[in-house]
Structures are given as C-alpha cells and as structure tokens.
Image (tube, rainbow over all chains, first blue to last red; front, side, top):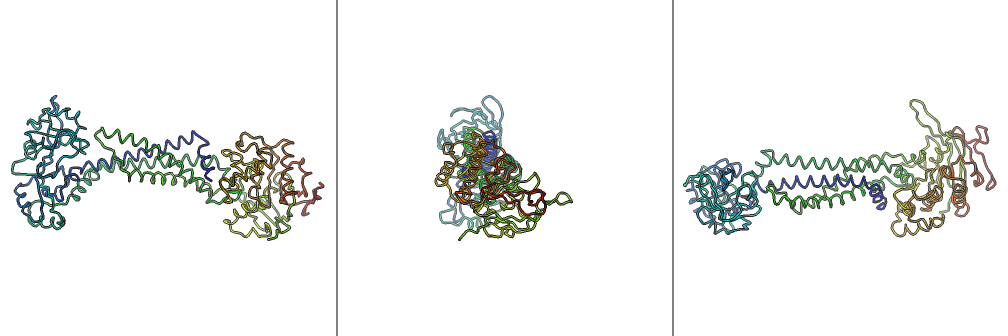
Length: 374
Length: 243
C-alpha cells in the first residue's frame, strides 16, 4: 500500500510539483496570516503584558490603552496607602508629534514611566541603559523605527511637540500596533511632551504585595477610589487586544486571509489528488477486482494525501521561517511560536486528508466490473 | 477441509441489465460447473454473455437470479461487503489489457497481490521474485510494465493472479493483445496451472488458436450455453485435453 501510494504520487512529477506548490502556498499563507495576527495581537497589548503590573487604574470607560482619560495624580497616594499594594507608579501613553532632524513630522506615542518603580519600563534595551533615561529630555526609541524617526545614534537631538528631546538609547522589537512608534521617557518628560497637566496622570500601575489576592485587592481599590476604574493586567490586555483585532476589523481581515489560504490549499490539493485518482482509476478498479476492500483503497489515497501534506508542510515551513526572519526587520512582526508550527502540521494534514475525500468518494462508487470493459 | 470437485458452479443464472425503460438479458438461466483442475474455455460472439458469466463466477457481478457457488459456498446471497474477501481468498484474475500498475516494477506489481492478503515487505518481495522466475521473468524484477512486451506483461499478470495462491483463475481474453508466440506462451502457463497445480482455470476467448489448450469448451450465444448452433442445450462439451 505504501509503495503504491508513493509511486502513484511521484510517478507524475509535474503533478506532484503542482500539488506541493499548492500546499506550500497554503502553508505559507496561513502561517503568515496567523503569524501576523499573533504579531499584531501581541503588539497591541505589549505595553500592558510587559508592564509587570498586577492592576491598572484607568480613567472611566477606557476601552484600550491608547484611549486614556486623564485623572488626578492624587489618587496615587490613596493607592499607595491601601493595604496589599507593594508599589504603584504613574504611567502615560499618548500620541504626539515628533519632528525629525530633517524637519519632517511623524506621529509617535510617548510612554511616560517612573523609573524607580520597576513598572512599565522599556525592555530589550540594546543601546544605552535605563539610567540614561534619567537625563533631562532623554528618550528611548526602538531600532526598527530608526529610519521612520530619522535617528541613527545616541545623542541625536529631535523635537517632540516643540520640545527638545535627546536619543539616550534604543530598544529592539518593541513594535507599536499603530503606525506611531513608542517613545519611552520619564513620566515628567511625558507630561511635557504630551501636554498632560502636572497634577494628572493617565494610568497608575500597581504591583500587589507577595501573597495578596489580586482580585481582592482590585475590589478593595474599587471601594476606595472614585471616578476611575481598576482592572487587572490580564483584563486590560484582553480589552486592548479585542478592540484592535476585532472592533476595528483588522484582526478579522487577517484571519479571513488565513482562512483563504486554507481554502486555496484544500482546493489545490483536492484537485490534484482527484486528478491523480482519476488517472489511476482503472488500477483502483483492478485492486477492487483483486479483492481489495474500500478501506485498502482509502488507505492508498489517504497515504498520498499524508505524504503530500508532510512534504508540503516541510517545504512550506522552510519558506515560512525565511518570511518570519525577514519580518523581524520590518514594522509588522510575524510570529511563529512552536505550538503554532506544530498546529500547522495538524492543519496541513487535515487539509490534505480532507481534500482526499472527493477522491475517496469516487473510488467508493467504483464498479470493479469496469476491469472487463476493454 | 477437502476441496469440492466443483470449484465454481452456476445454476439457473440470469443477468438482466436495464437499458432505459427496456431490459437487456445478458445471461438466461445458465448452468455451468467447472471442476477442480479443469481448464474451460468460454467462447462465443460478442455480446453473448461470456464476460458477464466470468464476472459472476468471479464474484464481481451479482446475478439477477440464480445460484453461484464458489468452492461449495453459496455466493449469490452474501452481502456485498463479503465479496472482496471471497475474491481475495479464492480467485485470481487475468485481464485482456493486463491491468498492471504502471508506476510499480514487475516485482512490486506481483507483491501488491500479496500485500492485499497481509503479506508485505521482504517476504512479499521474495515470493514475488520467485513467481516471476517461474513465469520466466526472473531477470525483469525491476522493470516497469512500459518496458515489457505484451507477452511479458501478461506473464506478470499471471504471476500476480496466482500470487495469493487462489484455487480459481479467471482470465478475460488473455491472448487477445498478443502475437501468436506470446499467446501460446501465456496459454502454456495457464494450462500448467490447471495440470500441474490443480487450479481451476476459466478463460474467455475469441481466439481459436487456443482451442487446443482447453479441457472443455463452452459456447455461449445470446446469453445461453449452446451446443453448436442448437439453442436450448446446456453445454458444448469438449473432451478433456482432446479438443
């Protein structure tokens, strides 16, 4: 059975090439689209996920992190006085204007952090150190956005909303979901760069004391604070992801493209396996006459599908890895975590075996008496 | 279990095909017993029902009515799902067009019949090689059907037909596509199956050159077994080895 399946498959090399091309195309398309979806989803909430905070205090009815509503920073003292709070820090994320050295304007998102708190700090710092951010007007940007922001070295001076800013360091891989890159600076500088009043903050990040139940602390803070909301880190992350990926429709579009890849793969593989089956239909009839059960014939066809799937998957993943590597240098990261890579193998197998159903149906209806007809 | 003397027998077998609103009777109350070790030639003009009868004897086609017994077992009442097992265990087929698998070597073609019976791998390859050697193709194990002559292809087909050691071999026009020499070689093989290996061999043929190989010749006309041109007679009975 194995030999027949393999030989039937490789006998017509052109058809095999078409089959594998279809599978590779489908695998790459699905990996890229799902990887983009994951990359986008991760990017939308990366500030929250990497904040080290347990709870976020936000303005009322804030749907996602970029849509902050200012509130009085005096709430910070109430928060810090609440039992179970190990630390808290003001935090800001706000769009503003960046003027490149060549005078061109770009939109950026200034992220203001309190350096001593350990909350909301930039990560993956590859040039400069966090201490460098303490210098007046110091900012960190991500190296991906060097060209976009017109900067290429530490010490370069730019303008943010008409105020002088100096590049103090670079991070790596901190992509913003929007087209406006993150610019990390101190909370104080962020107030200046974003026109946030001195007595206001956009968020307060809270770290719970070890052993404290975060849910209980959330309830306690809600009872003590007015005109603000207290949400867990996970909930705020999810709210932000859902907003960008589904409310805006961006995620749906990417998922639909992934689905399209799946459909294309199924159609191409189904067509080629069906054509192979029809080409060998007399042989299947002979097998039936010889006493082969339908199960045996299904086995031959399914093995062809599985062999195609495994080879196509392997080639597709090689191409996908190159695409993923290439995306690391671009603004839109394509993620390919191991579970997704393994899941793709399962999906490819399902796609190819599913595509073989049409052929199986053809063979099931085959009359073995056909072998005597000329 | 002792084999019955009648390897395959049909009783009052009728086969009717629907043709639009009309019905075409391909076989009309046919009776035929073929003994163990007998080589029977089914002859008759086109459309006489030879191949239909062979298909029914081979459990590929069901009769519209009548009884079919293979090695003493009534087949006509078996459910469809059991027929492949009967064919696999008891019947080998040789086809006019050889029906070899073009993507497989001769050895793999023969081994495939063993694979169907659950004998795979090296054992199947070894047995296939031995069978091909017996039909004079020991040097062609790695050849593909496209590389063989018609006679060689049919010998591979015969090796495949007997690979599963079936007691009955049914052949449909096995020499029709062959030249005289190859035809005789193939018929020699089929006859030796009956004589030396006690196989029951039923051959459908138009080929009058093959008459000398048969133990018995059965003539069909219009779906009936006839003697000479006389209608209503069951069989044209040839003498054993003396036709």
